[in-house]
Image (cartoon, rainbow, N blue to C red; front, side):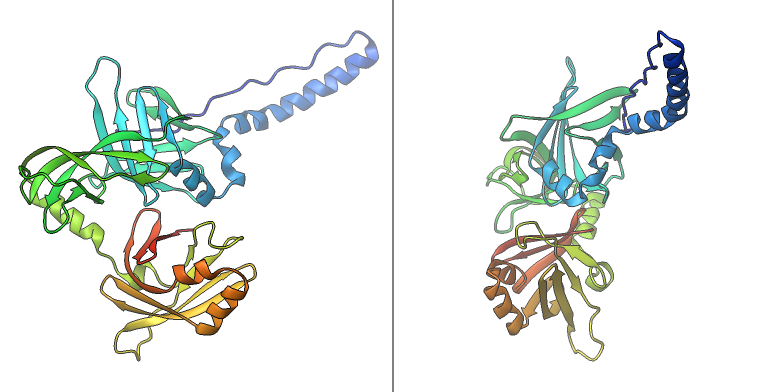
Amino acid sequence: MSIICLNPISRVGSAPCAIDQACQAVGKLARIFLRRLAPLLVLLALAPGQCALARSGQEVGDWLCSKIFEGGGITLAFGEDGFFAMKIAPQGKSVQHVTGLWRLAPDGVDLTLYTLQDSRMRMSVGKGALYALFGQGSHVTLVPVQKEKASFRITGMLRKGGLPVLTDAGSGREFEVNEDANAADGKFATAEIDMGKGGISKGRIIRHSGVVPRVLEMEGQNYSGGDFAADATERFWLLPQGLWQDKAAMRFSGSMPESPDAAGSYEVSGPGLRLEGKYRLQGNRLTLIPDPAGLRNLKILGAESLGRAVSGEFAWKLNSRGLELAGEHGRLLLLAP
């Protein structure tokens, strides 16, 4: 499915005629000015999404996650970890469900939806709406609706070791699902999930069938891997809003060659903020050890929650929005700037 950004066009009017000679001269100058200004006005009108340029990609991303969008028979929701679900229900036709990952440009305007099967859809984030061109030139505007949640379907491999988990084929995401005695391990299954305000419910299995093709199994495994040193170090990751009153970022140094284990240092910095520490890495397990003096300073500043958020042991993985750390205090999503 191919999507092209949709941008409405406005028109520029002309100056009114004067009734005397003096006003005619002024009107002539005004018309000349408007003729020279018109191309600029048209360019501005061609990009309504540019109103979002003053916003950060992080703020727009949080806004996308807090809403359910509808328009043109389409329902769309965004997960905080970069997962999206779309339901396409054109009048008189069968319902389609599309899942995958989403990525927002730093300017908060260009939005890309894509799947592990390399299908890409491009949209534009305007002021209060999403704009796109679907199918054979069908213009679609998706606007936020007053819904707490919406239901979607995911399909992929079911694993029943311990808690039943379904790996969605479109995104590679793993979803906890309900126990179904008739659904076999290592088989295809379809589950229904509810999404709302960035959260995703436990899936309800509604169908199950044959063995998953090997190619989808490999794609899911590739997604869960990664090279921490190559993908996460020597760059800044934005901390979630709420941990500090101003924007703050986290940076991991490269591992120290003299260390027997993969290890290095990290720092958290922002306006009026500085915290340093060490990290250790073993596979997908990341241990963060902040400097005690830095933690004491955070306590004085009333930011103990920030200290807890960047301390302890985490399971790490990369997703389409950034670096995800899951630990005993919950999930920390460090956004790519």
